Length: 218
Image (cartoon, rainbow, N blue to C red):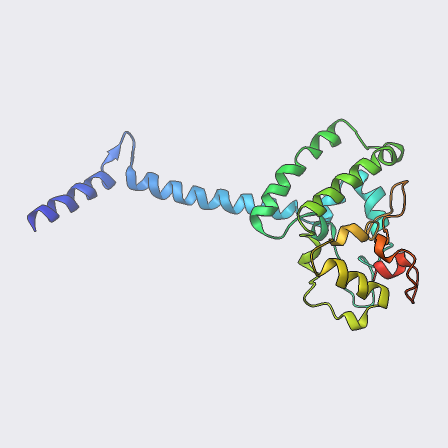
């Protein structure tokens, strides 16, 4: 019992005796409070950079891709559900979000050096930028798309025959992902071949309903 008492007194002495100028207890408490403040400030700043207002604060985004977004079904539709910039370009899970922010930090250099600070420069780089984003969405298996769209929740009976068949053959088995067919769904396509392409085995088949691009955008 005496040994336990001496141990407790020793610990108390360490916590309360000034170490240089401050006690260990004060330093521990101060470190904890400082950590909480830092973490709160970090997350606040992170969320501020994850808003549409922040994204379009640069004229490069506001005058180009955002202007195009406002003319699409992702911006205005009968159900009133709107997808903002971070909904499609930033993962929702915290670890994936941090990784995406680190990748996007290099875009600051583009802003500083005016890589796309004019409409002409933007159009010159448009295909390169689009391919980079398409590749990212392909690699993460349409992670951002799946934040809102669920294959399991699809009611194929409410889709056109062409869309339902393509989803059944390719999307549901995992042979293709959203971006394989839905390029140009939220922004205009670069100067290139159409963003959709009918699978080779469906070429020549007569499937009723509208055009391929109309069906694949449903």
